[in-house]
Image (cartoon, rainbow, N blue to C red):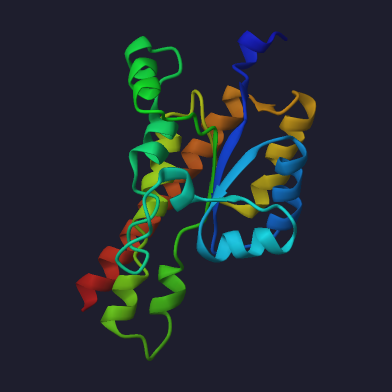
Length: 203
């Protein structure tokens, strides 16, 4: 089957920012081996530095520091423009080039553990609010919307799936895989938002 039929999209640049680091060492080292440029933040960057992946700090990449106790760090045009641009849309590419935005082809993100936080009997409303993820859902929804070009992984169980395709296609993924992963995103974010609503409604 031809690459055109498969809808292969090469992965050259990724954002990795996860709370659940299960399996991340193998996956991140695999991405590095494939020559993927990795961007990361906070605890994930520290973890990746510790295993020799040495990702680029997102704030260094965007030229804009994390602010407001980390509430604003990935919400930047260089991140979202890199995810959302339509690769074969001329006006999108002109804007991207004018603003020096680079494509981001892979998003690997877990959301803040909201359910786990509110399950604690002593949790305060303030703690619950701080565990409502904003940047994570924004990135994974953007990637899922643009699944024609972007791969998004929200579950460590899917790392092997992605690695298998990348091994077989010289570092790319198929459109069928990207669509399946995108559907998982919208299932996750709908359940995540429902949990937030249910918690606040009970308050």
